[in-house]
Length: 66
Image (tube, rainbow, N blue to C red; front, top):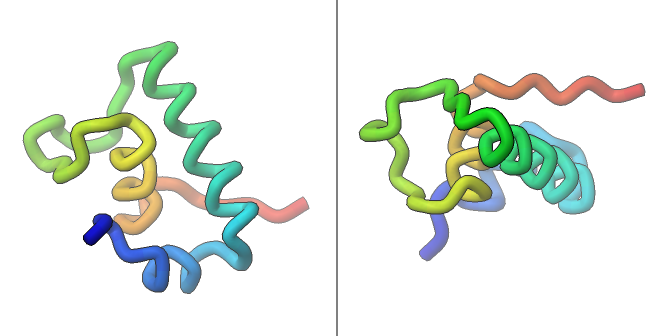
């Protein structure tokens, strides 16, 4: 099973498309800057895309609608 659950994430973000957009943008930022908002040992996921979803679930990423 994937972590975090998509059901929990969809309570934070309105649509799956927005979820993919936010996660991919944050994942690219992690790759470029090597900046993580939590300690590396606190992440469950090994890949940056999973780490970005974990940050979203923990409220470290704020989604702003325009």
